[in-house]
Length: 68
View 1 (cartoon, helix red, strand yellow):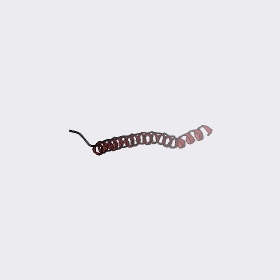
View 2: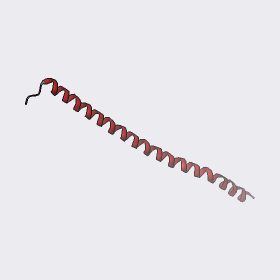
View 3: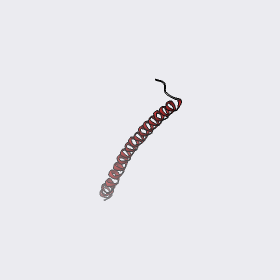
View 4: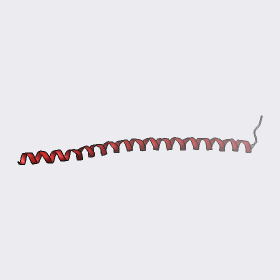
């Protein structure tokens, strides 16, 4: 069974398209995963900042108490 040149080219193009699509999908999924990790880390930073800002009134009251 001999394939014509046109069929061989068509098969190669289809395989290349499938590989390119798979690579693109994998890259996109990888970027989404990395974005989620970054968002989680920023949420941790914001939590620390919020905790520190919540502690400021306690610090102010302590300083006022010592000043009296």
